[in-house]
Length: 222
Ligand SMILES: CC(C)(COP(=O)(O)OP(=O)(O)OC[C@H]1O[C@@H](n2cnc3c(N)ncnc32)[C@H](O)[C@@H]1OP(=O)(O)O)[C@@H](O)C(=O)NCCC(=O)NCCS
Image (cartoon, rainbow, N blue to C red; front, side):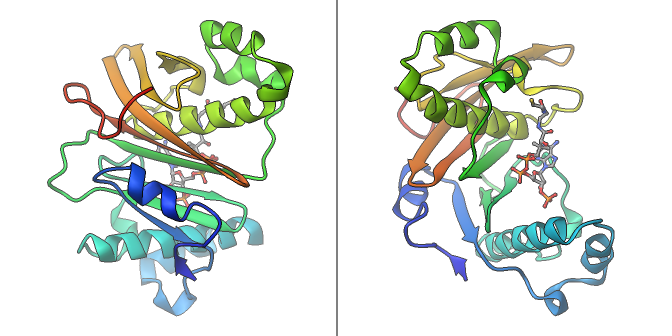
């Protein structure tokens, strides 16, 4: 099935993420629907698990490109991309994209389903300030918040067109507890800012981020 998988994130993303289309796929694209170039890419993956995830990603991406009225050959794309992003988790893939006339300088999406982030990992992807905030949380909230923060950081990383050589801990959240908020990074390319929003559902989190320095976020912040 390609479209909205019922209980997963169905009603949420399209309603909350203004101007960004999300396509969710939980079935792979058929091999005969791949272009010659895509088939070459497909055969380069070492494991069946990676090939399956990649095919689900191609299903989501091709459906998104179809909605946006763009060419369906995904070999023309590379990531990070100014208007498109992709994530896979479990048996789902989510592609996010904006039309060519949207003024985004990068989009990132990250989905985590049935995942647990080990608290030890916090020092690899949170800043010192974020870790201090996390340490003060009630223990019953920690696992949930860590997973949310992970998806936010991954989404922001993917929305950064200059993410080469960066790590998740380079990206600073203005308010770590905010489910709709701002993030930034400063490096030799300069200062870059992002807006993100996170949606929680039964099995995990979906976060979307955009690079947008001058304008307000398309969703309300908290
Ligand atoms: C590249 C990365 C963002 C992929 O994220 P992931 O959670 O492993 O996988 P997801 O399924 O969510 O996303 C994979 C998709 O992201 C896209 N992608 C790959 N590299 C990307 C990049 N540099 N920027 C943006 N998007 C990227 C691709 O479309 C890929 O799917 P595909 O291979 O089927 O085309 C991640 O591995 C990474 O490098 N993170 C930041 C580095 C870091 O700090 N890591 C350590 C943290 S402790």
